[in-house]
Structures are given as structure tokens and as C-alpha cells.
Amino acid sequence: MRITKTLWATAYHEAGHAIIALANKIAVYSVSIKPEGTTLGQALIRNVLAGRGVACDISPQNRLRMERYSKALLAGPIAERKFVKSDGGRYRCKGGSDHATLINYVSYFCGSDAMLDAYIKLLYEMATLEVNAHHNWNRIENLAGILIEREEIKKRTDPQLFLLG
Image 1 (cartoon, helix red, strand yellow):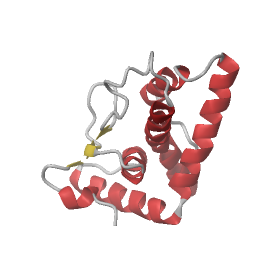
Image 2 (spheres, helix red, strand yellow):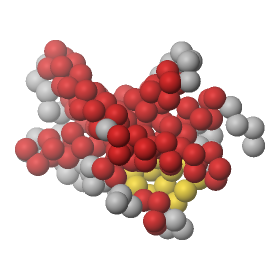
Image 3 (cartoon, helix red, strand yellow):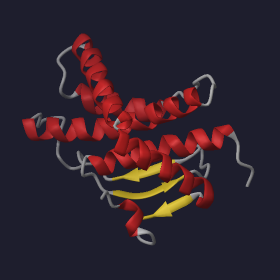
Image 4 (cartoon, one colour):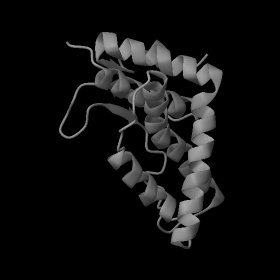
């Protein structure tokens, strides 16, 4: 396998999703930097909103679930951007599917486009703080390095890698 800056950026992106999901008590099932379809990698995390009926139940509990899930979605592009900029490169990540999923869930809790934009900005700042926290960033770097070595990690076969301690 040829290790490129794009592969490293993808590893940081997926590691960002996984580590911030774990930090927010969201299960992570696998993390991969194997290209599949239109994606360069994937962090398979539990959708804490699935089956919660957020379209009709915008309770405080669902709002908190949405915020935790949103921070995990945003953490991928944030970690990738931090890695690319630290390497002197220009950030080019589109984060299309992450952003579309984010807008879909956050929009249920907002009454207007202006409120949606403001809420997403707040969630972005919250996720940035979590990614930049020293203990989280160290875990993101470690997981990215493991992904470069192994391409894929599954909770079923490597449960110790999915524990925060």
C-alpha cells in the first residue's frame, strides 16, 4: 500500500469521528481507510438518533443525543483539517455526506434557516474544542497511525482499541 498525504488525511478524518464518538459515549463498530464507493474511508458509529422519531420528538433528551452525534460527525473534517494544516498543506475536504447528515438531524430542532446556521456554528465550535483537547488529539493521532498500518479496525476483533482510559 502506498502511503500518501491523502491516505494520512483520511486516517485523521476517520479517527476524528471515532475518538469523538467514544468521548461522547457513542459506540464505534469499525474504522477503515479502505476506499469504498465514493468514500475514502468510514467510521461506523452507532446512530444514537435511530428509532427515536426526532421528526416528531424534539425533546431535550433527543436534542442532547443530536448534539453528541453531531460533534462526532463534525470531528472528522475538523481533525483532517488540523492534520493537513499542520503538514503545511491546503485543506480540501468536502465532508459532503457528513455535512448532509448533520443538516438533516439538526434541522429538526431549528425553526428557521438562520437558527440552523447558528446552531451548526455552535456545534462546530463545540466539536473543535473536543478535537483540540490534548487527550483527544493524542488518541486521534494514535488511531490514525494504527489505521495507516492496518487499514481497518473492528471492535469485534480489537475491542481494546475502542476503549477510552
